[in-house]
Length: 149
Image 1: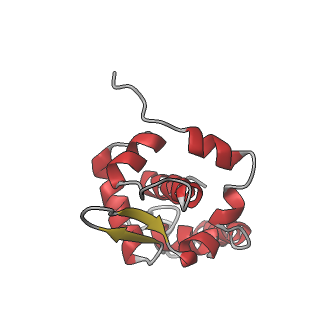
Image 2: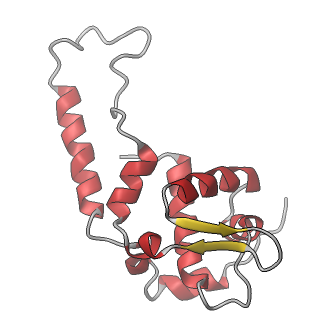
């Protein structure tokens, strides 16, 4: 199974915020987190907006503002987060144009849906907090913005 780019970015941002919580003098901004995890600011801003809507990230504006992972974001299920970010769509495009001629009698679609759910279920017991334990956490803290090409 392949995750969308925005889900990948969301997980990286969540992990980065998990290790910066309380360790930095000020909460990191979207721009700083985007640079640290190596994604364009515009993509990060869209993802942070979605994560805020899901209750995973808290944003504060103005002086002393920035991003923080909520307690639900830190201890909630990665599987639940990935499900919310990926949506309920099918793995294959049976209804695309032109639609698949087997769509009325196909068993593949159901099998792929079951495999997708098994993938998500394997992430259910994992939290963002689990993902940032040693050795990952110190590496995340050491990330800095990459030089521009």
